Length: 104
Image (cartoon, rainbow, N blue to C red; front, side, top):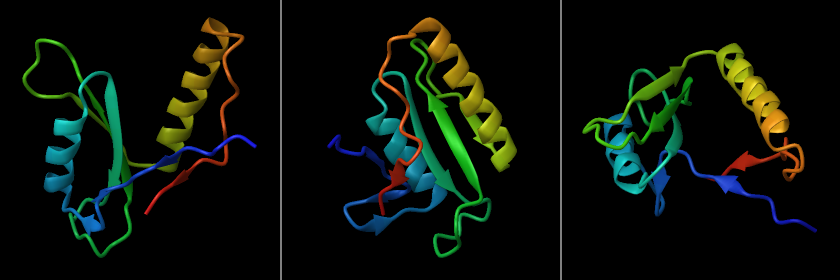
C-alpha cells in the first residue's frame, strides 16, 4: 500500500507558532519553489486556522510573494485549476491523493 504523505501546519517539533513565527520558519525552510501553511487572521495560536497561505520562492527577490486563500472556494478553484493543468501537461503523472491530511 502506498504511504500517504502528510503536511505539517504551523507546528515544528511539538511547538505551535504564531503566524509571524510560522512565516519565518517557512521562509527559512523554503529553499526553492513554494511552501504552504495555514493560520488565522488573529494570529491566535489557540484558534483554528481560517486561511491558507502559499509562499513562493522567486530567485532575485528578497521577500517571498504570498498568496492568501481566505475561503474554501478560493482554494477549491486553485486546486481544480492546478489539477487540470497538471493533467494536461503531464497526462502520465501519478494520480492525486484526495485523502491527504495535515499532520499535527
